[in-house]
Length: 131
Image 1 (cartoon, rainbow, N blue to C red):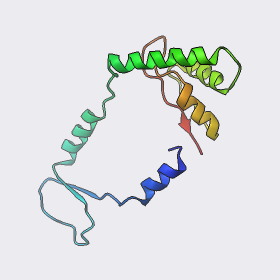
Image 2 (image 1 turned 30 degrees about the vertical axis):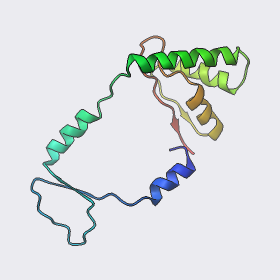
Image 3 (image 1 turned 90 degrees about the horizontal axis):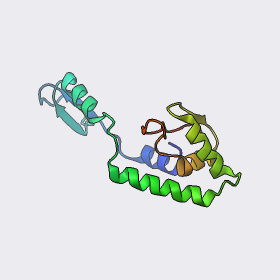
């Protein structure tokens, strides 16, 4: 995560303890388990694999993305500045990954990068951040 505040809120939240077992037998002598999933590990793995399959965004979201990108390009006006560099880098990346480590470049790429590559119409890989 790139937000210190958000990261702190996640850490301060109540812990989540999940017990996965084929039978709904309570085996929690310390009473710390918050969720019981009565299923096999294989069934849980299959359900997670199915749920986590990336799906392409709808035509509506692609249209909104292209309208936003066009507006950003009009506002940038080919001036050499950080937002223009962020957009140029995102165009050149394609399916490659990028690791960035400063706060402002992370924000610039988040705000101004293209959401989809021009060539494949596939989502551009989000940059990895190290703060």
